[in-house]
Image 1: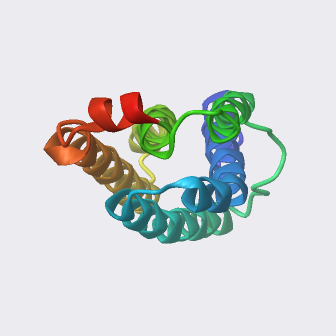
Image 2: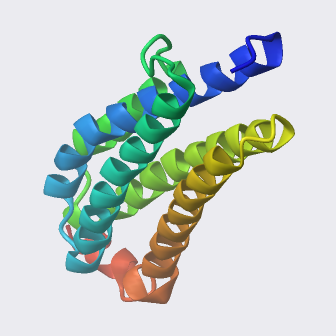
Amino acid sequence: MPQNAFYALFIEELQDLYSAENQIIQAMPAMISAVSTPELKEALEKHFKETKNQVSRLDQIFSIFKENPQGKKCKAMEGLIEEAQGVLKSNFPAIVRDAAIIGAAQRIEHYEIAGYGVAKAFAKILEYDKAVDLLQASQDEEGHADKTLTSIAEGGFFTAGVNQKAMKS
């Protein structure tokens, strides 16, 4: 593979995503355990499995290019996860904590959507079609996870008396 500066940037973007996804895999079980709403728990459990598949896709890409997935720590994801962990430690009533978890999870999803978009754009420029396809699949899953979280929040979670339940707690 060509070893030019743009290729190196592409690999760094992939390493950032790899680090981010692995940090999420470490943090998600605690988020899932803290959730009280069954629909939200189910959505997070499903996306946890998808996240593991996203790491596998990244592994495939690194294998294609014979590159090391290690080498860069995603500091942005580290910060997003730190914020999410703060939510888990909060003294909010369970239903309010679930709302805060949705917010934290969506911030994480938005970072991932952007990261996959950037890496995919670089892969297109470099004409790495297989990488484009793999990155697109992960970006699609991230977008779907974000939409699912929005649907849970807007489709009844927040409108089903969360304020009344929170005020009673």
